[in-house]
Length: 197
Image 1 (cartoon, helix red, strand yellow):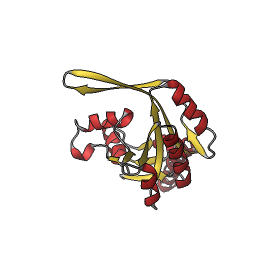
Image 2: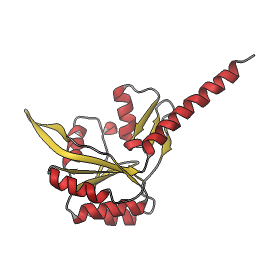
Image 3: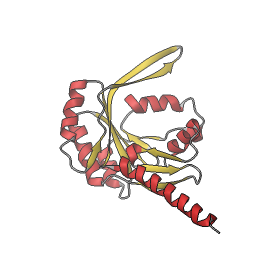
Image 4: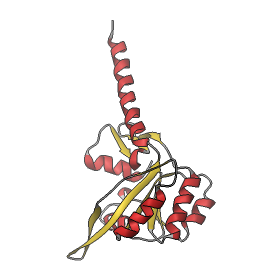
């Protein structure tokens, strides 16, 4: 389970469930465990990485334990900045690797929840989106606005602005919601039957 999901649950005061990774993971806050997780197919991850590499666009992978990236930029630059304000156990684990394709190929059991793609140029970002939409069995988060975050450098706030999307396995938001709904129904049914005399 990603440490960041557990930390987010605490920060926002969630006491039941957290749906994360564009619907690819459900964390049960009370029992401190994942109750649902769906990872991307390795061949799809490699296909997306290849497109990003060929088009020199920034991307990173979210696994069950860390964010994998080639360097700190856009969202990972922001996470790194936020990490400096947090105690070690609450930091987002960012793993910087030189060659992500090789890294994936060398990790037989890598579990990728989602891929994020970022760029500050709308035209370049739109071209990549068109290429990604040709890949079957993936879900692409449709985002039409620019993400704006700020990092502190001394007494200054420095803006980080970029277009952003998330890619995961197809149709997991609805499946994640159904999983929670069905779990609640089963629990209510058990309580109802248990309370009958």
